[in-house]
Length: 584
Image 1 (cartoon, one colour):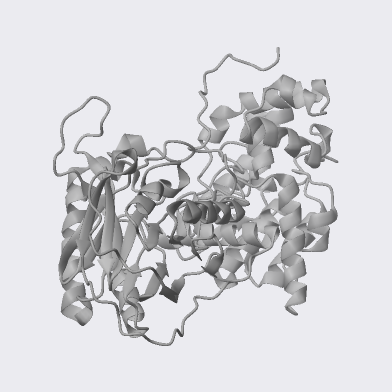
Image 2 (cartoon, rainbow, N blue to C red):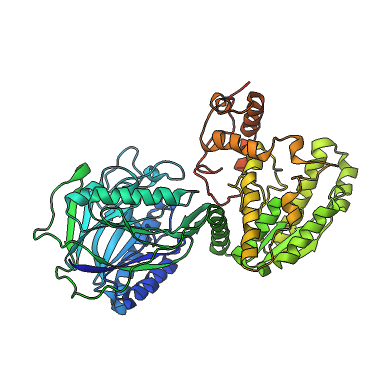
């Protein structure tokens, strides 16, 4: 059978950085050429970054993308890579746009092109457009209606984009109808817990349906709240894994494949879902037979906690770097949330770029102040103490606050202190709130909710404890100092805003609370269904009321890394003004 050396470039890109993204494409194409690749591929919309959101509706940006693609094709040719086909995702528009109600103006397309000999040999648009979770692709794009097939060294390669594999029908069965020897799908599929297993089973299933070897190329990196975890996969037509790339690691998977020869007659006509076969021959002649040398490899899978922790590190690192910040600032209370955020920040940016501030009040316990200092000693981050008691006394003398107002004043003084230091020194502030607290409204606006990014915004409190234990255990296994003081993990969680305060004064045990929240927030289950799952009816009713009442707070919370199927953000869009309640 004919042979093909395939290069799958699992790389990061930055939304809007057309020049920087093009430079990365040239760099990795050069790497693939040096390794003797016959076909090179890059992720979905790699040239523009993904997702571009409303930038897709700006004709100026669409045209800039198109021009950059043409310039990239010319540059690849000028640098000696013209004979090497390169598949690149980009933002395009339909050449035959027709104004239609409900269609985005300008008919933008989530597209890809095969660059060859200094030009665009073939281009096509995503056929299936996702419109769930964080995706709004019906808002932004018009679908493609072709079945693109490119012949490379005597092998017909069918092409697809992300959702074309996730939905039934369309390009997968069309690849079989077209007699393709390889189905290549370029993707920008965001990370979610346990998605790697789902993704593997999907690719296996689609390969069997397409009847050919299937390559799933994924993106790596972060964009705002989204993280892309890589995990590119190649399977044979029976669904057996040939190669699998590392998670959360940029790089190139290069492997030798033996694939069926293309038919004597080029495929043509209309196939599944009304897709028109668009077939282009780049090279009919197979490469001269050679001894396969590159197998692509199989990267070891990460454990559950390591996978989530890696996502949080990548998310914060990408957000800071892509927005031009090299350092972060965080309030250190001695508690578990600020401790895990600090550890994530140190791993993402380096301890020398992390600045911690202890802001004790008269209610702060000695052990909490000590735990904050111990965290700084263990990690090596920059540390200072700014007592808030003098500020607090000045406010109290003027306002004479009591109860909740007095408690929240302390949080707001800490928020003001952090923002003042941020403005003065240039670090971005990290908000340490977790998903459990945000769900029930246990965050103070303009207090602990201030910041540019929330690293654990989508992590339930019970998971925070598991991540902290894993991070310490991982450090011990490497012969390193565990970053998080044991007392921060074992002591009862407390905001320390009044004497003797602990979270369980007003909340159930976090394992119970988080189980209820996951059903209500992540799975959209109602009160009756949650009670039927075995939870106390009064507790469920109280919890749901707290969640519903806190919607306005969550809208004002900073962005943070998404790791669940439904985070607080674009996944979950509930009205703030809303009188519907699951319970009276």
